[in-house]
Length: 116
Image 1 (cartoon, rainbow, N blue to C red):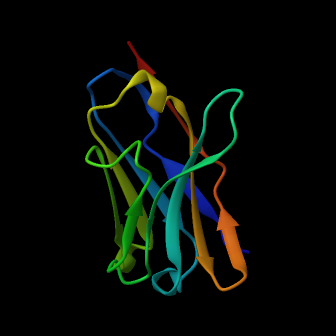
Image 2: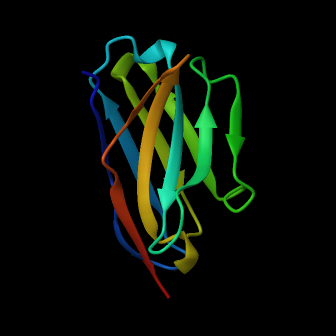
């Protein structure tokens, strides 16, 4: 069973930065695309960013472009989300997933709270 564990969340003031990590138990992590999603209180889960297995293709939600950076280290089976210039509206539980074909796996999430 593939396990994903997110870490790095916490409380930060507006304008601050956090770096989220997503550690995978899957040794073939390098063959999966990876994504970050978030769910704010009372809202639907939404896409934040994604990166292809090689890192060659990256996409961001418009709301985070220029502020967030997704990356991965396949040698460490770990993905990252660097979040800068955080805003109160970035407050949410952040989830990572990995996917290959019809297989998609999710982590349990890490809470990010941005105070104004």
